[in-house]
Image (cartoon, rainbow, N blue to C red; front, side, top):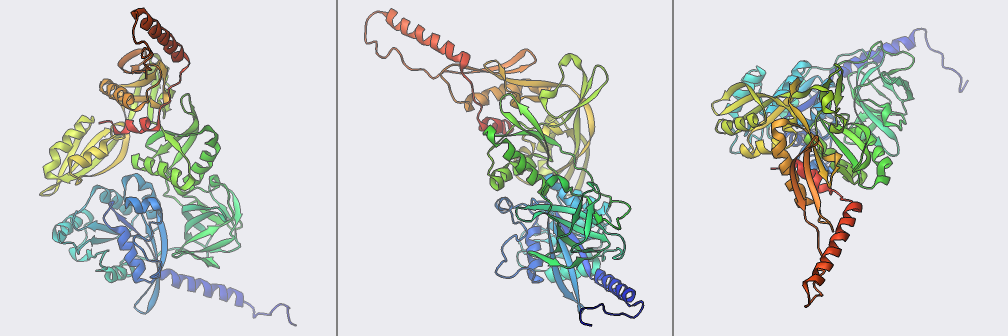
Amino acid sequence: MRGGPVSRPFGQGRRESRQEANENLDTMKNIRNFCIIAHIDHGKSTLADRLLEYTGTVSARDLQAQVLDDMELERERGITIKSHAIQMRYRHGGQEYILNLIDTPGHVDFSYEVSRSIAACEGAILVVDATQGIQAQTISNLYLAMENDLAILPVLNKMDLENAMPEEVKDQIVDLVGCKREEILSASGKTGQGVQELLQAIVERIPPPEGDPEGPLQALIFDSVFNSFRGIISYFRVFNGTLRKGDKVKFFHTGKEYEAEEVGVLGYKPIPQAQVEAGNVGYIISGIKSSAEVKVGDTITHVENPCQKAIEGFENVKPMVFAGVYPVTPDDYEDLRASIEKLQLNDASLTYEPESSVALGFGFRCGFLGLLHMEIVQERLEREFNMDVITTVPNVSFKVTTTKGEEIEIHNPSGLPAPNYISHIDEPYIRAQIITKAEFVGPVMKLCIDKRGILKNQIYITTDRTELTFEMPLSEIVFDFYDRLKSISKGYASFDYYPCGYQPSKLVKLEILLNGDTVDALSTLIYQDNAYPFGRRMCEKLKELIPRQQFDIAVQAAIGSKVIARETIKAVRKDVTAKCYGGDISRKRKLLEKQKEGKKRMRQVGNVQVPQSAFLAVLKLD
């Protein structure tokens, strides 16, 4: 009977599923999931290019420098901003291996991206520049990998350069990682030296993933992107179970249910598959339109046979720096909301909530991981979403204890209670690690102590490289600390930090007034002893930046009702006496008095616009 059911011997279906399971276990042995961790500019994106080239993942036509850095901004600045996942196939010892590489950013502001990538891997390639040695960010990312029990593969990069110091840098790696000297691989991302040996080491030294392909589905979302045609595409790593096309799935934390319209693996371009098994990395498209429904770090499971608990190890990111983001034209408010939502989907460490300002109208209070992160978000809003935005003075969050004993968290100086209701204010402190050449130790120490830092430790890594550990307020590094550190150390110092709690501090609210009206977007909470010089410099800077009007503008810095600094922007004046070519002085005086009256009237109705350059200039006060 043509179309009828096919009769099967009893138990054959069970035998086939067991056979499939055994095949899955065999394929799991041939999977390697790894990430690359390094300090910024140590050449990991170039090394990733060579891996893709040697495994034939990217065709010669598509090959370009920094293949995985596909954002225009990443190419311009030469830094990795986003994690990127890609699958390679590599033949070794007569077997084909699947290598899943998750490229990670190197800058301190994107450490959350690194933590997400590390949680989805079994091994990490530690790339160290042979000309520079170990830097601060290398150490913090390495500790993160060690906490997750990842197999570490140390690699000396840029070995083709004449000023490479392989022996010295190998000593540093042995001290840090505790490995044998012969385990350290030498490579060059530029020339391709040592890349074959690295591929062999990935297969031999990184363990295959563990998991049960037949168990309940348990997959971790480590990234997601928005596609205007397909909705949200989530990238995941399967720990247990198998995800098939057409499966009914649910997201553990949000509890929302979807159908897996398409699943696949991540080649140079997404490759659709019938299923993605335990141990592998892939993507899912399920027609999700709202970014609020996808949380990075969430667990995907089946609706019918769900897993008992979510995958652990993913933290909710805590922003360190806060700033207001406002549209230049108030009509763009809803467009800005949609743009930030889409951006947050791709950058899980960005947080936002609506707020309003007297000077700027409606906007959002955004939380960032640091100043570079803030700059990148602003540029991405302008480039990717065509949004013209004004960003206010960045500040950190403070804990205020009132006289009634209540504790309030303040992200914005305008939310500070009146001084007579405040018992004390606690500000966040960080533990900063600075690695620098011995000759710059003095200037670096002076900079940190000027920023209210307390020296906690000083270690000589080698004869001419020192690691300094300082405890200092986060608010002091928000402004110009990083730029000044780079300039006094001629670019040699590397900087890394992590939060270490709150401490009481003498802080005051510094307000900027234009013609007696407070510009709430320029208000800051500042250390009492720094308030006067900072207010003075703010007034001088605003005097240069605010365009002259037809009337005098008073620029004042005030603490409460006490004005501590003032500058006056003189009025643009028309020479009304030019037509008086002679006669009595009273004629000229009459015209001048008339002009004076007009200026006084104008001052009552005139508004002063603060240009965007003024908000940005606050960051670059010398």
